[in-house]
Length: 415
View 1 (cartoon, rainbow, N blue to C red):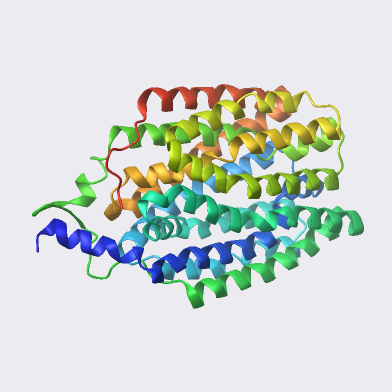
View 2: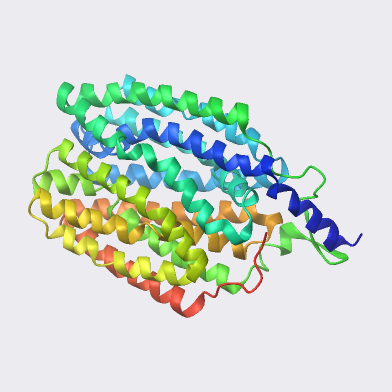
């Protein structure tokens, strides 16, 4: 048997029913976890400001946490490719209990910052998670399957923000947020147990991760494999960084703008977030099918170009109805980007370096989001609350132009 045939045989293993079941396990575990995190993530910015933090400090905290993720992700990519995926996912699943527990126990913004930064260590499992998903899905169905996974995982987000908002209305921002954190601890524990008991390893033990096999020859991957990635994959990385920067500019400040400038209540924003989640649930799978049917690049470009003007319109909103309509239009426009992008990245990435490429991708996202959050916090507080929302449009348009000009879908897809 030639080296290529041996590799093909090893690559065929994750297509079995055993590994396809991993998608169900990951979807279930993520859904349970999101049921908890969705109750508090919508209101973190409001709570942070209420205990003494400021928008600039919020941006700095978000930026610092993202930068620390970079070091963690490098190690996570190495572990995913050299020591397997499951073990690190289980460990970090239990570690994820720490953050909501600390949020529930402390009411000092400085300790809040430390807790948030410590939670970023859990990102070490991100390369393993994405690699497991890519390993477990046939390439020809990748976008549809990823979209389905994301829909199932995010389904609790239809109800969780609304539940968190009801806690806040009933018990006040401080006690309501902390009570939601207790529920989040229980959900994180259940999620970790699901991963521990049911996830199957997808890294073949007989595959040498230190070498990339091509025909009958081998080459040292750590030095050459990553540098030999296609130009399309590299430009896709740059465009993704621009999108991450744009989202970092505004991500933490939607709720602040909605409550401080437009005049909405916390529960009003929770209703909007829940409606967004409902639309994602309805639209994402058809969008994934469209990407597999008509091309991932086309869907990504359409998504970015449609998203670009939405934040400007949001900044002009003056009522709940106006804010809700544009927030829903924004999520409709952006729904199709993530599964198409993740699938195209997997299509362009050799299996043997998928964990490290994913880690590098996450590092790029972390640095870009960190820069965006830091800039967004400064612009929101010093220049004007609407400024980050205007700049979002500029960077989205640049990202779309880069994909149009420099990214090509592969003729042969990585399994």
